[in-house]
Length: 330
Image (cartoon, rainbow, N blue to C red; front, side, top):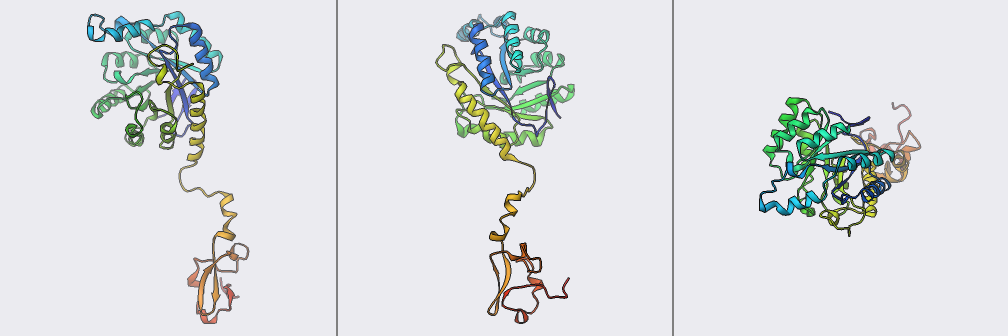
């Protein structure tokens, strides 16, 4: 199943599509947000993603155990004006703009803005009301699977299949940062083998290695936290990539995709040009038939190559040197 982001069509063979997850790193400041979007474009992003919510609609402010969480999200809550300004900035730069709705009213706002896709956060792959609302929007869904149990992912996929919604499934590990020995990239070929979705990787590890390897395993959509400056105040700046790091990620993904090449065994002309020195023809040396370099058969079709032992016949009747076809041989 292909995946559509606006006019773009992503297949399992598409070049990497890189999303700069700005999330809360705008600091609810229009200028910081716009500058971050611009730097994401300079750093190789194809899209920028934010988080859309009304804090009171997805966190219980009466529960003291999550008061700190409520306060963080309340501080960085974006207005409709923020969304429109950030969307315009992104579009003016040629970037796709979309967001993660964390409550049902957020889906309505994002639909009013006509975003091309909705991103479902890992924690909401088990949130049936929000999934139903998002599916009902008719938008394609990018769905992260971090921290979800296998049966929870299977349950969500069953819902997606039943409703016919277009899905891109992201492998994800909800650890910040994710230790490299826990990235578990084999989930990517697993999703490719067990679904017909375009598959991606929401990468919370340090550096570019995990994403580069994920590209080689078949991931197409990549999401990475992005910030203007890792030293800015805010909950996610320190776990995000700055422009220099993100640029390297973009470059490494391009190289990884190119390194993947074509499915099957591809032989380059530059390789076959070395056959004369690297392969062997059959030679008569004393009483023995030997495979020796150079491969004279690559320049003289009458010389036997090293696979043609059965054509030698009686070695005693063969002349010393490169073994040639008998004049009447076919």
